[in-house]
Amino acid sequence: MRSITLGFLILLGQTWLRAAEFYVAPTGRDTDPGTLEQPFATIQRAQEAVAPGDTVLVRGGIYKMQEAQIARRKGIYAYLTSLEKSGTAEKPITYRAYRDEQPVFDCSLVAPELRVDAFHIAGSWLRLVGLEVVGVQVTLKDHTQSVCFENDGSHNIYERLSMHDGQAIGIYSVRGSDNLFLNCDAYNNWDYTSENGRGGNTDGFGCHPTSGSTGNVFRGCRSWFNSDDGYDCINSREGVTFENCWALYNGWSPKFENLGDGNGFKAGGYGTLAADRLPNPIPRHTVRGCVAVGNKASGFYANHHPGGGDWFNNTAYRNGANFNMLCRLADNLTEVDGYGHVLRNNLSYKSRGLLVKFDAAKSKAEANSFTLNLKLTDQDFVSLDEAEFFQPRQANGDLPKIGTLHPVAGSPVIEAGVATGLPFHGARPTIGAFER
Image 1 (spheres, rainbow, N blue to C red):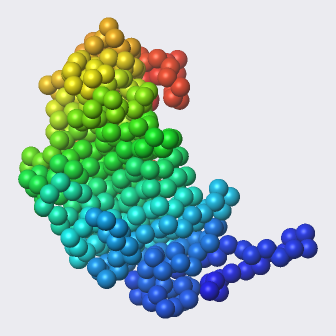
Image 2: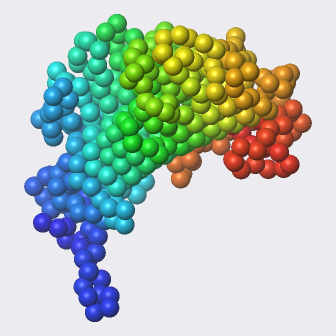
Image 3: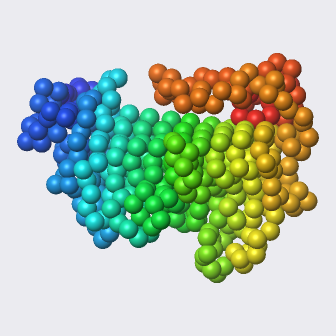
């Protein structure tokens, strides 16, 4: 039954059904009609009611999820909330926080002997905005994972989502094209249950597209204190783009316990996959305008990729190695210094390895702080206060305005770059992620 907030639009003598609004609240009941006065209790129930063009408004408060609410069990997976109904290009379906309220889905009591997906999204043309997921559990002891939001659809937008203080990957996308992951935060996630308890499979964001799953973009996201990597696209059959994203202290616990791999941006690689099973052609990943600070291993890492990537206007500071361009040959066995890479306008400061495993003769590198051999000091930056990276986001969801690692007037990085297609001020771009 459609919500009583339905209306009618009279146009050219015809009657058109106006898009509906449905409501969900912690105090709601799934037997109610889903209105503002009588909301549903679950997003799962709201999905049964929606049609393309409709909006589900999720009221603030704690949603204490229960195992009895698992919407679907499939093989080794338990989908706590399963969104399979699709919108259209003209009429997407939207699930969003109501006004400035904060809905929090606490999954700490959901512990089946299965991999847990708090939200499994198989539908397309969906918008998820302003939802928070905490406490997602891992219960299996062998090689496994749980996920806060798993995307298997196309043309979806995930905006201002927050995934934290659990054992699960924040966002995990394998199937589907042209998805945008915008202004999302994943932090303090550590799988201390499976394998050796070091959380070696818990990334902030994982994107591993299948063949044909093109056009996936992460923009304005933050990933910090996740037990494995900040952003990971190992085993990808198509290229992934990371824009204006930050990766901080991954591979460490908040107490700086030594955990998983600890790379900021792991852009590529195929593990032990046989050479005849590699994609042809090998995809190129793009990392531009991003920041990696304090990650245990590498800030920006090619991860044995059998081919190059595009790295533009990034800033790396105090990572184990700031830029690690390690590649493999086409046999996916022989490790060699990175080839086929394009590095432009990147800033690398204070690390035991400003740039490592890089074959300059077989790559293109220009206008980087390390290729220009710039002698940077702390005084070249407005601030080096790393706490600024964790400030609250702006009201519109954008990353906070900070001074950390921004160049001061007179810094040698200002107008020292080359054009890459990104916007800039002055005669030439500034080197690094922060244009002045």
